[in-house]
Image 1 (spheres, rainbow, N blue to C red):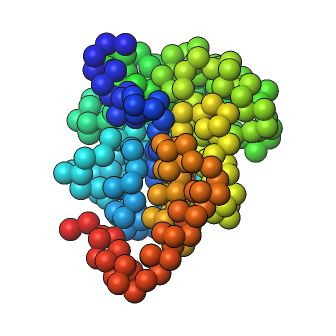
Image 2: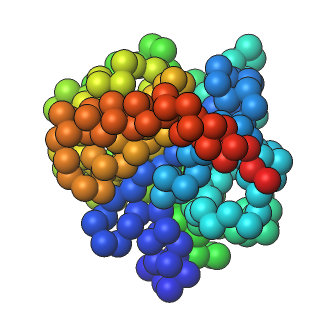
Length: 278
Ligand code: R5P
């Protein structure tokens, strides 16, 4: 890796511990106004100080995150489909490398749809994006999107992650599954686990814990943080799992303690005041 690539990569995965807490807020790129992300500005503001990086599209970055915030950006550059469209796998590259550089992206994210109708198109896009990223020293995160017909098991996810790494992805985002360590072992680049649909807080913390325990470099979590009634409490608990190696019980007690703080009328007022950017 050259200096620029290494430097950007260190903003995504902390060199001190090889771990990362990426906050995912890119859901609108195909889902539209996802529950509790309708006003992205409001959702993101109180969480920003606690995330290592932010994964989002250029539209939400430009309009909902002030440019003076010191947060590394993982820019989603693939899309072109929507939940009501023909086929979600028909994604292409939607943001150019020049635009990504202008937006000071530390990493570029693109979904691949292994085993789907448009598998080839998305894998070819990954190869192209890696070429562009290598040219300018920007790492690429491949997101293994899983179609409804695919099993989220170690065999399928292992294949998708390995294909992504073979095509040059510098880091891969996937799902946690039984025998996850097999997926990790056969993928030569760091793996990050997506949170998935909203779970009870304790279960989401267990997911984060198991992910890092079995070899993930961290999590890229969205709904399980900002769809919680106490998102700041949740991100603090997840962060402690990722960077402080605490267990689920300890993390849940952080969540409960922070939840109590957030319920306190004074803390609530302070939180509301800081919840919107100036
Ligand atoms: C999915 O395609 C998006 O890229 C999300 O960033 C990803 O699924 C992580 O978000 P969540 O934790 O809500 O699943």
